[in-house]
Length: 460
Image (cartoon, rainbow, N blue to C red; front, top):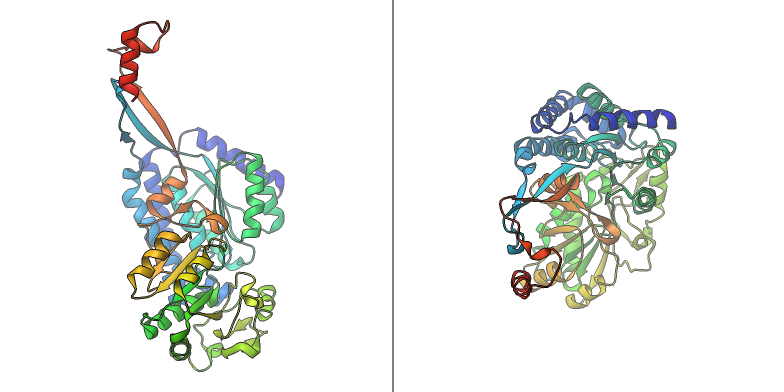
């Protein structure tokens, strides 16, 4: 799509929003129901697209993408009416007699830019929130997942008129053309590098934005942890979608006294979950493209590999891989891995680990396996990170009852459920002042001692 076509599309969405068509709550709920029904209708096609782009099995595609989308849409259908109500707040005595309230209103014309690793979930989830909040939307899926982009375009074009919700496909040229436009709100999910570019463009227009980024999310396993259960859950979360998950445990910090037992348990779990030959497992996916495959292969130090390490260039596949005796100086620790490579570092002193993590970039997720409640308290109260789990991984993002988002280098803002509605809304603060009483103390001339005393009483 050309710059001129994008400008024309956005102009039509501006006119549609100004008409007030998206404001009625009943309209929003009807659109959400339509979207829900259409996603259900195309379940098979969605699974086929995810298999083509990422090698995902139908089970994983539903569990981690379309099923979660249906959950979010259903949640918004049930709660949009409540979320859209005005919220009464306390009125100070000085404003007697008034009614003070906050009124959520849509930002207006929004842009949703989604990534390739969960191309259906991370496109339709924020779209559901945008619709519930009463916005129009232009959706820009990733060029790296073309099959999913095509089914997203099919679903959206069947559900909505382009002046309400539209899809723009393409690559960098289309991204640049969209970011040159003035939107009322931008929602971006992707890498830190591209997130910085998005923020530079939105700053030019003073446009608010939510950035869902990533980072190196640590997973701590201390000596009190249930090692076998920790290994089972970590293997699931680390190698889900071949490690191409923004909240996957990036690296393991394992207490030295249980490290050997943990490595053994992880080895057994990889075999149980993926078989003796994971590259022949039809339910094991692939790396998105040759570029990322080559990058990941460059992070593997075969001398430190204790599990896996085999690759298939023809299919862009890498076995679930474990590297032991890793240090901060290894290449695998120099960037977010975003692939099926698990580096294991060891520690002797838990408190020192916490202190060292305070000096690092703030991760999108942090995981702790422990039975020690003091350790839990230190991690949850002292460390800054987007979100996480105690004695599990990844599952904190699979709920509409909690917001999901990063902090610092891992992003800004959050969404899902109520927080998703609020992310796409502006809250107007309004005072409805009654006319039957007008206190005179705020008006000049300021000479009355009585008014001065009353003013001090009201404002203290």
